[in-house]
Image: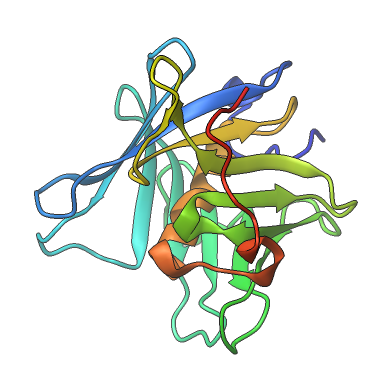
Length: 207
């Protein structure tokens, strides 16, 4: 089983990939996220946000054509704010393939990702999502995906927090990684801070 595989093999790449994630406005209908690949092609979208009445405990990650790739569902009640991920459009009785929870119920903390379809495989999410600087680490503490600020290369200007990069290591499922980003945003939003990155400053350029 490849690292992080569990959603769709189409989004597992042989080389490192840098996806651009746009968090759309919170003041209009169909708010959410839009994700582009390095060529500017639409890859994923999420429109489960906004002021209209919706089930705030469930999010759907779709491909560019509106196909449901991943359903994320919040477990209630849960002190650790647990979320579960289901392949495709969740159906009654379907079992989740992974579970995400806060590592502690006290204060700001990291998150643990359990791969239910591969017992023993686990990931940790550490960093400062509010500053768009966090990592998804495997059991060996190797970075498999990273959220970081995006820089306008022509002007060498760091863009606002509503536009950021999701960098994927070879072999890591991009749909799975984006699903985890959605959970982080739901649990912590712009307040996700952990000491691991509190002292980190942002360079003006990225590779």
